[in-house]
Image 1: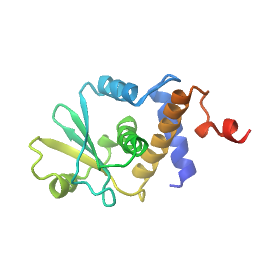
Image 2 (image 1 turned 120 degrees about the horizontal axis):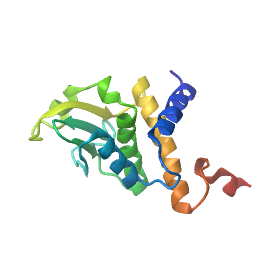
Image 3 (image 1 turned 90 degrees about the vertical axis):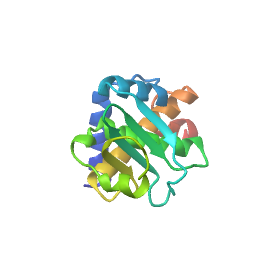
Image 4 (image 1 turned 30 degrees about the vertical axis):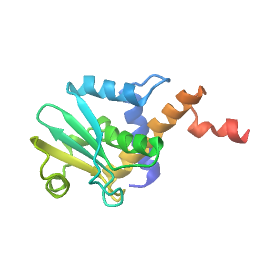
Length: 160
């Protein structure tokens, strides 16, 4: 799959998810919690290097956990979280899983993890599609925060 195909899938998923024009990261999390009928905990995990693995989504019995590596900016943190949320929107938990992530990175977590998806590279279709959707969601949030109409990174405002 190429990036153009991934963006098409991401656009369809974004449209189906039904976000308002003035969306926020918090709104997306709330909507996912309602849709999945379970809470989502988002937290930093200092043990994640950010080079091997910068984010992981743990699917537990009765809740989801999104963990991210320590980051230097709120934008990078948001992008990692949006990527994991995108996996949820795209329903990748029904398709793929990597239980080895739990054993390798989180052996003493203390919760019953049923499945795990990790954000490390974009070599497969699910990762590429999740990143394309995360990019689209980030653009919506940025445009909302600066009070512009949705357009990629306010291109017309910057370049005329």
